[in-house]
Length: 393
Image (cartoon, rainbow, N blue to C red):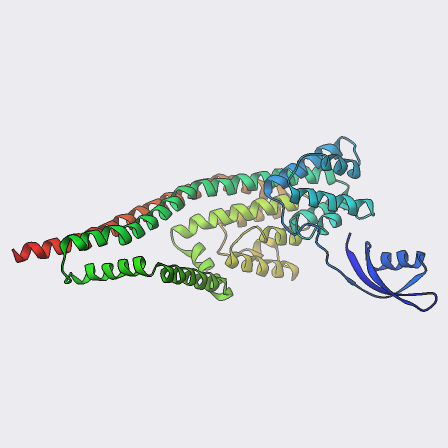
C-alpha cells in the first residue's frame, strides 16, 4: 500500500498535515473524510519497504509455496501469514511482510508486490495482474516458480563455466605482478652494472616503480578501472560493444544463441501466463542484458503497435538467432504462439549450454596463450642480458 503525504483542513478551518497509507488518492480522501478532514493536496511518499530485489532462489521458494497453498484452497492472507512464521532472510521477510500488510488493507496481490519498492521483478507483477483478471493466480505462481528455476539454472551454468577462465586470468595477473616485483630485481642484482638491453631496462623501470611507489601504482590502477567503467557506461560506447558482441562472425553466433534463449524463455513464460504480446515482449526485454538487442526489441514493439505482425517486427533484428523468427511465424500461423515459443525456448536452452561451453573453452585458449606470451616476455627480459654477456666474452 503506498503512503501519501497530505494537507487537509478540519471543520474549524485548522490546517492539518500528515502521512497516511491508502490504496489511491480517492481512498485517502474517503479515509480523511471519516475523520472530518477535507483533503487539500497530497503527494505519494514513495516509501520503500524493501528496495533490494529478491534473489532467484527466494523468488522460486516464494512463488512455489504460494502457488501450492493457493491451489489447496487457502486464502492469500493465510498463505502469507504461514510464510512469515518460517525462517527466511531479512530482505525476504520485509518483502513478504509488506505484501501481507498491503493485502490486509485491500490491495490485490500484483499491486502489493509492486509496493515493495523493487523486491519483485516488474515482469512478475504484470503476470500476476493478468492472472488476477483470469482467476488463475495459483497457476501463474507455479509458472513463475518454474520460470525462475530455469533462469537460475541457466545463470548458474554460465557462472560455473566461466569461473575457471576468470580464476586463471586472476592468477595470471598475480603471477605477472610477482615476476615484476620479485623476480626481475633479483636477476638485475645478479648481473650487476647499470646497462641493460632496452626491453629489460623498460621492465626493470616498471619493477622499480611498483616496488618503490606502490601506492601511486594502486591509485593509477584504480583510476584506470574507474575510467574504463565510466567509459562503458556511456550509452553510445555500451551500444557499440553490445552490437559487436552479437554481430561477430564466430563468437557472435554463440552470444546470439545465449541471448535468444534468455529472451525466448521469458517471453514464453509471460505470454503463456496471460500477458498480451506487447507486455510479454516488454517484460522479456528486461532479462536480455544486451543494449543493442534491447533497442531492437523496442523497435519491434513499436512496429507491432503500428499493426505489423510479430514475425515482420523481428525480421530485421539481427541480434537474435533465426529460430526465434521461425517459432513466431509457426505460432502466428497455427494460433499456438505460446507453445511454439516454449518449444523454441527448450531447444535453445540446450544450444545455449553448448554455446557457453564453447565460449569458456575459447576463453581458456586465449588466457593460456596470453600466459605463454607474458611468460616469454619475462624470460626474454632475463635472458637478453645473459646473451649480451656471452657475446662480450
